[in-house]
Length: 343
Image (cartoon, rainbow, N blue to C red):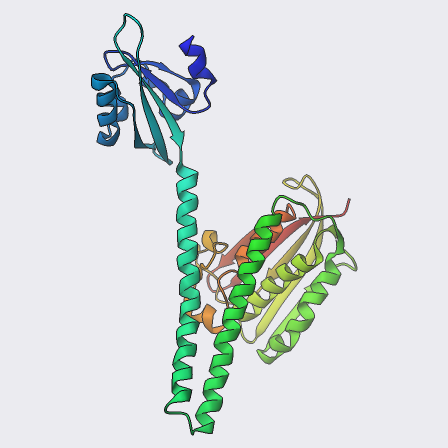
């Protein structure tokens, strides 16, 4: 009977016999801990003092307890909360039941939240500290200095604009997380969206000596959220202008794919290519992490918040698309997004 009960559990569970050996291991335990545990002493299976002590108490005194257990499979480290329960049987010596609850994702989520709060605090503290310093200067040494006042007010405008961009990006991320499971229901033309994103960027690009060259069909109908896709295109082209070669060229190409294997249907691929210094390979997997920057100083000087590619990734995922970043140091970077096409 107890065999069937343990097998019905979705969490790993071990039943120790009165001698301390593993009498039963359910399917989840055999999968997560290994089939070798059956028949072995709990000391050789568990090996961690934090868990051995509650098991000894359960055998000796019949006292239930809990402990933390870390299992390392060689590739993945899993954190378990373990419930230790003595099992008394009439006319038989005491057994002990161990039930393992995987809390790895919960702990990782808590860590991510702590890191996120710390990053936001740091990102806001820097411009706030600068603005406070400018205010003190304007109230003191620069009180009667019009030239200094003009310069400091300009710097204050830059720092407050940076804080405003950060707050806007944080709000965008929050909205995207709430919409992540809902596919967009609208219908858009990606070429119109691309034009809407590029037009406001041309004056800055021309001022920096950067030409934006597009290669696209007349139309590219697709399901999507217009405002979010404009945000994606704007971010990618703006990044190419900021971090590409100056003078140089940003190439934007749109092409049709008859059948994209992951999307399982027709798709549009949009490539944004710059001729800049490129990105070292070790940075590429982390580019879509929140607040991750390859060059922190340059990113902040360009007005970046460190959230742009995280937002792009969320939007592309919501549209059931794909994001790919390729770069060769000294040759430039190519960012590609693949979106489902209108069937």
